Length: 338
Image (tube, rainbow, N blue to C red; front, top):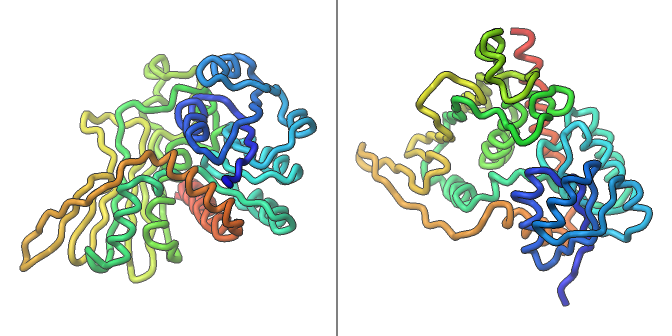
């Protein structure tokens, strides 16, 4: 008999509506029994689109009245900590949108709380759940491109400050700009592919050179934008493996590009392309990667339910999330020292 988990969705904004709610509805082990958001207008949209009801403006009232197995938290980053603690207090498992938390202090407190209870927690870092990511991971483990020595992360955009919520423009709510918002995804993907090796050193520079000019402010999608426009830096690992990154919302470029180049001594990948290069007799041979068809958002929920069913411990997850939170936190500090 299939285990059905009574699920609450907390935070009904753009990301929840576009990715998470459709994925939860598709999953046969998760049943949305209540929803919560401070803005009733968002609930009305969700009710119309998905037929969801049992609405609570305040999540604490929901926990008082509902018997829940899973709390799906899709609220702004600055509320994650209180929402996680609230879910732990009410003995529910947790699925939460990234970034996981703002800083290490918050993670350390959550770790202590989780240890005392049998609660499973997972963060929606969906890039690692893409079909191409999972296949590249297998090929890396097989040494298909040999020893990896250089990785280049590029997210180069002309104008891509997220406009679906004003929280992306406010540092207190978002934690920062593309370094935390996009970097969290790319760093998680890369370090997951590499099995989270130790970091030797790092550097970072933040740029806000376009919309900081008075004449450009009228083109901003919000009245105020407090975060960086672009982050550039590098991270050095063991065996002198180097990761370069250029992650930007705002660059004056026509050549927009998103890629993660992974170079080994026997070939290379260019994520998210589904082919790779292998060196044979000093010539590069292109090889195709066969991909299964599934959405990353569906796959990560499938993985989440499997871990719930198997009563998996959260300690490895929290180690990985803390690794990325610490890295982003240190990169921001490094940029201030530069």
